[in-house]
Amino acid sequence: MVMEGSKKKTRVLMGILGIDIHRRGAEVVSKALRDAGAEVIYMGYCLTPEMIVDTAIQEDVDVIGLSTHCGYHRILFPKEISLLRERKVGSVRIVAGGTIPVKDKAFLEDIGVTGNFGPGTSIDVIVDHILN
Image (cartoon, rainbow, N blue to C red):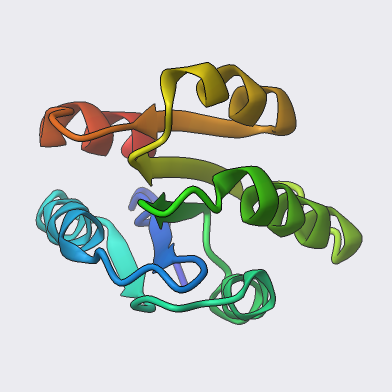
């Protein structure tokens, strides 16, 4: 329960879709978000879109952070968004990180993914985008 005058913490679910085990970026961003005051649920790696959506609903999250380094973003990210729409969880924002080719960023934005953060992006930029 949120007391009057207090601000609800942003709840962020972080996960890595597919058979991708590159976890450092997602872990660093998760820690930075936590340090900035967010509530972070870090699911780890080798996840399915269904696992992410089920957890997002159970945990009542505001943002889902998806990471990819193996090229699954053109297949699994659209499936993730489709499942969220099917389950009527349209208010959850999706942000992406990892090695997403520049040519695919417009594709992801068109399907509703914001904040396509690649290697070298400042942590402050990522945290600011997610929390604001």
